[in-house]
Structures are given as C-alpha cells and as structure tokens.
Amino acid sequence: MASIDKTSVREQVEQLKQQFEQLRATGKVNDETQAVMNSLLIIVELILSIFLEKKTRKNNRNSSIPSSQTDKDSTALLSSKGKGKRVSGEVHNTRVVETVTISKVETCTGCGSSLEDVPCRQHERRTKIDIVFEKVAEHVDAEIKQCPNCKSTVKGEFPEDMVGKLQYGNGLKAFAIHLIVSQMVALNRVQKQIAAMIGNVIAEATLLKFVLRLYQSLEAWERSAIKEIYEAPSIHVDETSFRVQKKNHWIHVYSSGGITLKLLHRKRGREAIEELNIIPRYGGVIIHDCWASYLSYDHCGHGLCGSHLLRELTFIIDSNQYRWARNMKKMLLEACRTVAKRKEKCLTPEEYAALQKRYRNNLTRGEKEMPKPPEKPNGRRGRIAKSDAHNLWERLKKHEVAVLLFAKNPHVPFTNNRAERDLRMAKVKQKVSGCFRQQEYAKAYCRISSYLQTMANQGMNPLVAIQTALAGNSYDSLNDRCE
Image (cartoon, rainbow, N blue to C red):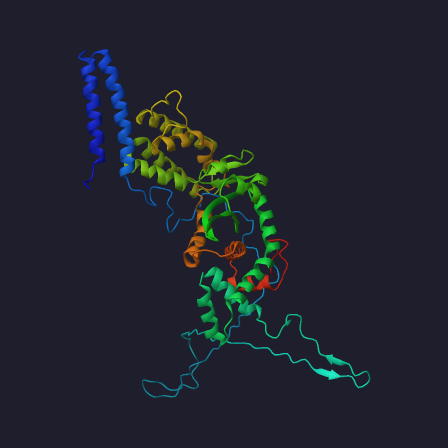
C-alpha cells in the first residue's frame, strides 16, 4: 500500500479553504453555495482527521500499549511507609566460608637473594568465589522402651517440626517457592532442579503445599500492608488481566513507598473495587490512567498518569500534526523536568498559575485547530463517535486538576509507572503457566509476589524473606526492625 504524506494532505486542504475564502470575499459565491461548502469542508476535515488516525500505527511510544521498560519517576517525594524497614526475626541459612592465604616471597626472582627477613611492603589480592551445595539430613531416633513395672511401652518425643516420617526444612521450601513464584519456573523443572541438588524427587503436590503454606502464613502481613496503604499520602493503582480456570480474572495492584499489594478478583471495574474495599476507605490521592471506575470516587484525590497522556499526545502529533498537541506535550515535559529537579518536588504558586494559564491556552488553541464534531441528530440514541484527538482534548479539559496535580502536590508523581512495573511480572508468569487451574493458587501467587516485591524494596534477600515468613515470625507491623 502506498504511503501518505500527512503534511502535504493537510496543506492541500488548507489551500482549498483559502481559495474558497478568496472567492467568497470577492463576491463570486452566493449564500447557498457558501453554506454547502462550509459544511463540506467541516466534513472533509473531520474525515481526514479520523482517516489519518486510522493510518497511524499504534505502539508503546504513542499509545497505552505497555512497554517492556518504564523509567523511574523522580517527580514526587519518597514515602517512608514500608521503605527501608524489615520484619522482626529474619531467618538465615546461608553460610559464608572465607579464607585468606598468603603467597610468600622467599627469594628474589631477579638475582636469587633471600628475602625471608625483608618486610612486606604491600599485598596484591585476587579472589575466587565458588558455590558448594550442601544437603543437611537430620535424623532423630526416638527410643522405645518397655516399663518393667507396668509393662507399658514408652517412646521418646520428636521435635515439633517433625510430625511425619519425612519432612522438608524451611530452607528447601524457600528455595522451591523462590523458583516457582519469583523466578517463574515450571513445576516440572523445579522438580528436576531439586532432584539434581539433593537426590530426592519431590512430588508436584508437595511443592504446591509449600506455596499454600506460605500463602497462609502471610495473611497477617497482608492485613498490615493494607493498613500502611491507608496511611500513605498517595497510592498507585492499576489492573491487568489474569487467566484462572480458563476464565479472565483481574489483578488489582495498590503501591506506595516500599509497599506493593496485589489482589485477585473476577471483575475489573467498580464491583471489584468495592469488594476489595481499599479505595472506598482511602482518603489520599490515587494515581491511575483515567479509568472511569477510579474517577467515580469523589472522596479522594486523583492524579492522572503523565506517561499515558504523553503517549496519546505523541499519537495525535504523528497522525494529525496538531500544533496544540505538540505544545501540550512540550509543556508537560518541561514541567516534569522542573519538578524532578526541585528538592521540594513541586512548583511555586506563581509557577503553577503560569503553568495552568499555559495549559488552558493550549486547549483553547486546540479547540480552534480541530474540526468541530457533527451535532447529534434528533432522536438518535447513544453518543456521537469522535476522533482520538477530540476525546483526548475533552479529557484534558475535564480533568485539568488531576493532570497538573504532580506540579502542586509533592507526594503525587508525574507517572503511574510504579504500578505498571509491579504488574509486569504477572504477565510473564501467565506466559509461563498459561493458566492457573485453581483460584486459590492464583491468590497465593498474588499475595506471595506482593510480599517478595515489598521485601525487595527494603533490600531483603528473597530466600531470607520466605524463610522468615515460614518460621511464623510476627508480622503485626511493617515498622518492626531487625536489629
């Protein structure tokens, strides 16, 4: 298919409009022809705008299609909630054996003189690091005796964590869970990996029991994380589809500071938000991508994701070359860079007022630059279809406060990249697993991955974090420190 020069097409339409205006000014066009031509030119501009949008291919640069990587957002103050704090009672089963060997110099390689009595001037170090896998098998033999007086059989007591003939320690459980949840390795491959290391084959059902055990152990942690979310000045929210039992479910993420919380629900919109019951009870600012279900909550503040808006503006520029879209994108990027460089992460009241005035001027120019959409005929149901440019313009006009909130509130970032990053690994997990067979395991994945992401934000080793949870240590508060 032949390519179209969008600039030349628009220039030709502008030339036709100018020629018609010249004819009208010289009185060569009567009133009836003028009315018909004005209507035709409006229709031509509208068709051209929609046609160019359809001809412009959407990608992760100019649409909401997620990219493989998103930059970190430094336009908001870092929240201290859940950041740099660890739970009490960390469990370690890692041993580091470190040796230092001195390579002595006894004779001179040049002349052969003895250097045994010459003091050392300095050392040059070279290091070799290796891993030795060690299987620890602990056997407990309980004595069985018969009392000579009453002939009763008495058996020695086993430790509390040895309830059956064979059990596995928390170190091996943590390693298996880490492979399944963090590294997203298939169960069959986890089986083979562990068998190669310890010489024992663990059934898939046993591996899944390890996951469910940790899922149940983290119930108190999840309640504590929700409490911390309520206290945050702003939270990132987003959702993504997830296949469970061959049906579409949705993972809803709530992130703030060092806390990441992912919850599974069958629905995406308001019904799910109400049942999860986090946003209805939250009074801060929620940062999102302008999803209507979030905007329906008026009791909390709203911040719109600047990355989504910039990509949509890029698409409008690519398709229709609108000057208002180019100026709006330039204005938002300049404001973002200015806020990111500020220590207080916001503009002064005077700077914000100037930004607001510039924002509104761009929208006014956009209204004049774009063709007006046709009026709705009488008796017709539903809404009139509009171009992407018109829809974006109306959204920017309606949600001005939410778009510019990052420049006024230091706790509101410019983008919602944090929530998108927190959800990205869930899509990778779905590609590996294809579909979760039971909802319980999908919920377990959400809770465990939330916990591990939160602990990773605090700098904790994932294996240590899993063992700490399996050991049943207290998770009453995320503010506990490990001294």
